[in-house]
Image (cartoon, rainbow, N blue to C red):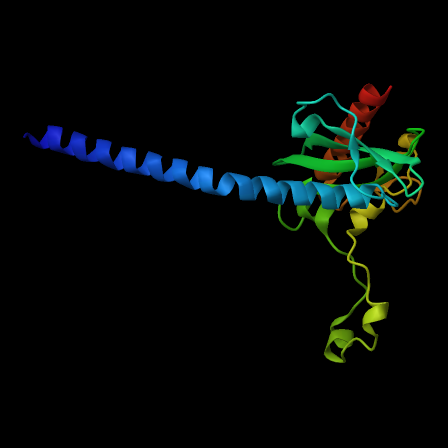
Length: 209
């Protein structure tokens, strides 16, 4: 057997073994990945639909892709507390995906949760940043607060969207409680989150109305 033929056979065997290995790995992990994604989606729905009781109800047709699904949330009295959907938009270096909660009258955002982003570290990634008032001195001294008084771990940027009317989703540079303050040095990422929220709102309105 010539060298070329031998190398070809060896490479072919390696390729087959690699392909089988990848296939087996995918099959064995597919269900775990699906379960993790479902858990993340449920956590996000609980965040953007405050007061939700039980499982949210899908209002999109059966068989809709996960990215296109729209949910309806009910409270303990079975009254509609809002709708939710996944929105997405292109950021500076990634597609930003956001779960959006919308009020029953579809006039204001209840809350949002950024589910996926791959923006520039230290800049665009600050859409996930947790604000804190703790200083190094407080940490060294043990904080001086009981666990009950612990700070809520809520991304400050995402908190700006809470209870905002749709016409208030405007990006500004200076702090303004009626608008969305841009992250310094990451205006594109900021606008992308707003665009993803608007994309989610559009899906909800198109489905519900």
